[in-house]
Image (tube, rainbow, N blue to C red):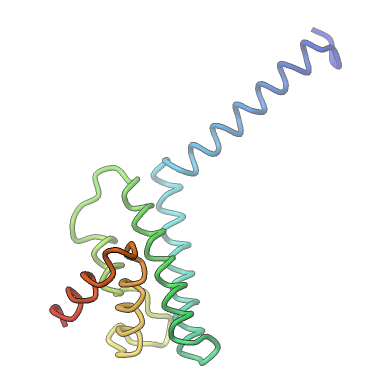
Length: 138
């Protein structure tokens, strides 16, 4: 097989496609990659909250962005092998563990933002039920 020959080019293309497929699969399902993505997602949550608390983002915009981050976190957690109840999923859904540095986890502004984000992260047909459930668990 000579460099530049059609067989070499086809082989190289197949190898490259295989490496890309392996990388994409690892990014989507390999537990260390999923944990990295979860940590990065939590960092993005803190940025959204910080921007809201510092007045750079409105409540509804921040809640929508945070809701998107909650959805992403749930999808990542679902791909982790054997998620145990009481770990990241529960923390994220209650909004705990996402306060930016210098802010308390018990800050009422963060709590109300996390609650609104959680409602917005639910499918539209379930939002009213989720909102009622959130009111009951205050």
